[in-house]
Figure 1 (tube, rainbow, N blue to C red):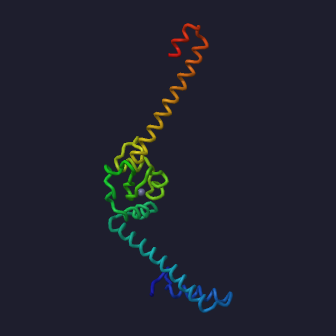
Figure 2 (cartoon, rainbow, N blue to C red):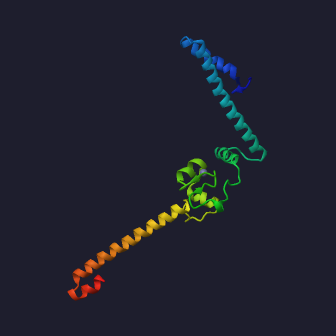
Figure 3 (cartoon, rainbow, N blue to C red):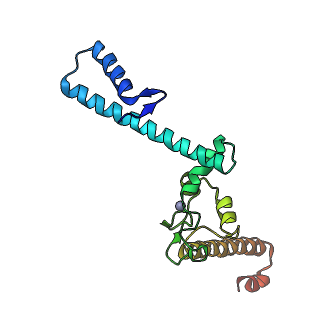
Length: 183
Ligand SMILES: [Zn+2]
């Protein structure tokens, strides 16, 4: 034990908290034990975070970086290996697409995943890994299915337009012309 948080030892702080709680109502021995354990654990966590922050600051100092809010974020990112988990050239497969940042397989990589897991927008992700801007972040079969659906929609739309034209033409045409239009 003997760790210090903000100049006080953890034991000192735990003691003060327990004393404060005990004044308000009578705590059973079990309650006190649980309280001590929880409080102690919470302070250990704070202490660990502080140690980590300090270690990061020391690294920053040693490489001549002035600490700032964004630097803390960068250090977080540096914890993950700089090498991509997935070869960007193999990221897009028939059945799935792998996130190059974390190696997880997806049908479609959502902007939510990129934002929440990696702090990137789809555009930033594509730029980072040299993916063409127009490349969908989806498995090949998903992209293909979407293309097919789009084509079907387009064909359907063309057919609809053609029918509308044919119908309006027919209404303007003489009965002899109508044979041609219906072919
Ligand atoms: Zn990912």
